Amino acid sequence: RPHCGEAGPVQHLVSAFMMCESISHGLLLRKVPVLQYLYYLCQIGIAMSPLSNNSLFLNYNRSPFPDYLARGLNVSLSTDDPLQFHFTKEPLMEEYSIAAQIWKLSSCDLCELARNSVITSGFSHHKKQHWLGTNYTMEGVAGNDVGRTNVPNIRVAYRYETLVDELSNVFFNQTSRRMYDIAEGGSPRSDSSNTSR
Image (cartoon, rainbow, N blue to C red; front, top):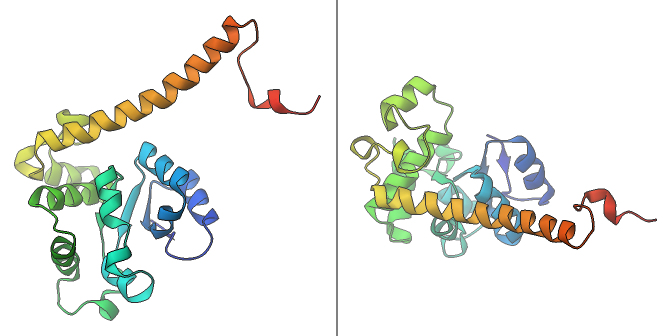
């Protein structure tokens, strides 16, 4: 999981979008809504470290973390340089407790973050099954074992149905446009149709 979108040009986020399943930080996605939308549609994991970001780049009150969570991006909390930014032997617990206090996160929010963290982690399939349940790879409510994740099915259903609706809108509009072109006597659009004649 590369550090990406913490600082520097946004092109790094574009490269990560094409090459990675998840990234660390992603702060600069707030400046590029189209790219943020692509990260959402593909559910690319974004592990954020608010304590580190607060010290180096972005104050808590300007952090995009709560917006990303509310929009359904696949965010989780992580540590970054724990010896430098944390004060206890449990730096990840610091991240969770500070995030919960600052952004008034509910227990449902915290459990969703923890579930996202395990899903996007490098743990083996066997370990993920232990923490999330045997069906964790299934989509929607079918992949949620409430007894293990403590994430209510209604939250998982909402996230899944919203994502499916967005994907349907994107692909339906593209299909409709092609069908319109064919009905008008043209051929389906392709990228090469806009080249010079």
